[in-house]
Amino acid sequence: MKFQILTLFPEFFETPLQATILGRAHDKGLVDYELVDIRDFATDKHKTTDDLPYGGGAGMVMKPEPLVGALEHAREQDPAAPRILMSPQGEPLSQSLAHELAELPGMILTCGRYEGIDERVRQGWIDREVSIGDYVLSGGEPGALVLIDAVTRLLPGVLGNEASIREESFADGRLEYPQYTRPREFRGRQVPEVLLSGNHQKIADWRREQSVERTKQRRPDLLQDD
Ligand code: ADE
Image 1 (cartoon, rainbow, N blue to C red):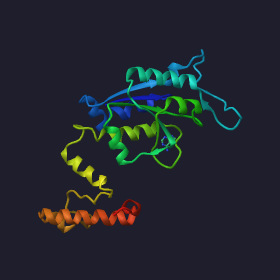
Image 2: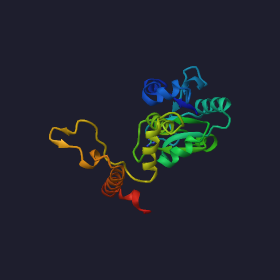
Image 3: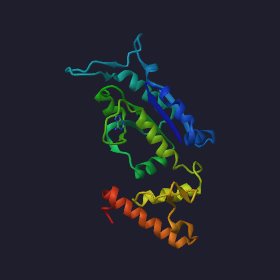
Image 4: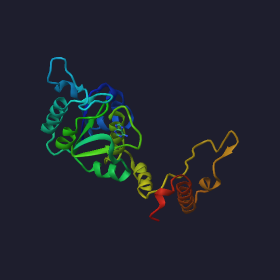
């Protein structure tokens, strides 16, 4: 899987892409990240990437020339990769969208900044838009990292077996059951007896119940189809 990340702030990604699961996936050769600095494609000597909005109003708009230059560069590297814009106006990122994206050989993630990008770029050079939630970030960078994490952990070989089983439980549309580790008693709080019973059927039933109960209480919207 090759992620090309178009951003005005490549340094934002440096540590996160090297750390934890994302870094390990890269070291194992399972993913490749390429950071494309949009500013490198600015066409004037001041390397301008934003400008005032036509019609007036607050804030700045990302200029089309550098953005399209960066998108064309990324497409030359990977002609089939969808060009995804991180945007609060996009389709919500969900576990099923993460699974769909994990099937691709690569993608181009475009991080917008300021008050937005020139609409002509959106219309002519973007294939889809993805939002990570109903709130406004100051730029698409944190959203791109969230998407990369959600997709990378689904790639074969990135996580062990245990994780793929747990993964399925969210795919069922339910929240996780509670987890415990040693010690058996911590500051007066006990691990539920059933988890110590060694009875795998009882444990599985208890976990399912807990998962359903938790989902009912916290996210009843997830159970609507049941
Ligand atoms: N950029 C700004 N807000 C965003 C959001 N909620 N999701 C993805 N990209 C964004």
